[in-house]
Amino acid sequence: MKIFFSANEAGLLTNLTAQLGALVSSAGLPVDLDDEFAMWQAEMDHLEPLDHSDPAIARLFPAAYRNDLQASAAFASLTDSERRLEIIANAQRVIGALDEAAATARGSEYAIDIPNEDFEAWIKTLNLLRVVLATRLGIQTEADSEAFEHGELSPEEAYGYAIFVWLGEHLEWLLQ
Amino acid sequence: MTSPVIDELEETAVDPDTVWTTVVWNDPVNLMSYVTHVFKVYFGFSDRKARRLMLQVHNEGRATVASGTLEQMETHVAAMHSYGLWATVDKG
Image 1 (tube, rainbow over the protein chains, first blue to last red):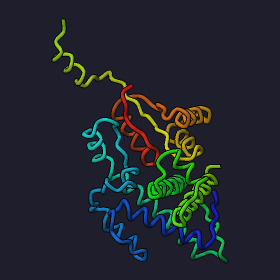
Image 2: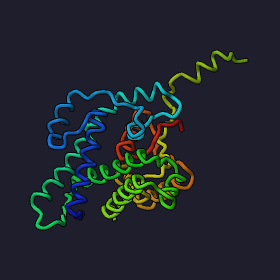
Image 3: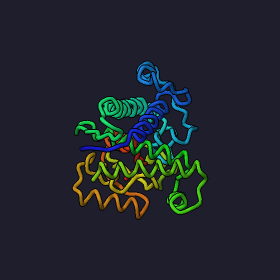
Image 4: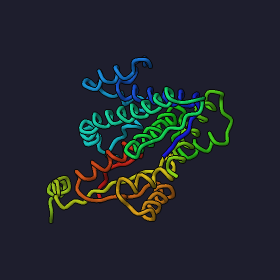
């Protein structure tokens, strides 16, 4: 499966994916993009607790039981670490492929070959980026979604929503 | 005549025969094609079954996608969360 990006798009996706990795490795830490792998590697052994008051974290790691806080907390303590490491590992695969494309591309158009074993890592990462962007934009209901599609948006909202739609188009492309 | 205390105890005791379910909830983010893909790849559902359940989530707000032991359902729910789907463990 091939996916296509301009150099600018690849740079944007690298940046967003690095932010996703940073969000789940240690929420709130400033991201040094030049040293992200070293930072994540160091933190994998010492993951700090997630900040569930961050709506994006709450959406990425939702309660497993609707009316049972205790069971949900027990579930989270059993599953959060593994899930965080999976998100980071998937993000690293995506960034690795984008970096390689940047290093080997002739011209400003990148065609990235996604091997079968990396397919789920790509679609999960693209979708989780949409999930995080939606929480940042405040898209929580179908009505919010309609309002963003048809309503008046501030320049910041329009930019964020354009990225949200762009990620969705690439996800649809991969799922075709 | 049964005692209300005993009734309460019976209700909260762990029943090995209890059937638990995995429920997937609608949200405005996940694409229909993506949800269908997840149901096919993770649960091994046919295209037809995956689409039917995806449409049920979309139209009715929720769909029960699996049932079994509590441990199995927690595994499924963690997997759904890893895909970015909103899922919960429920009683059947």
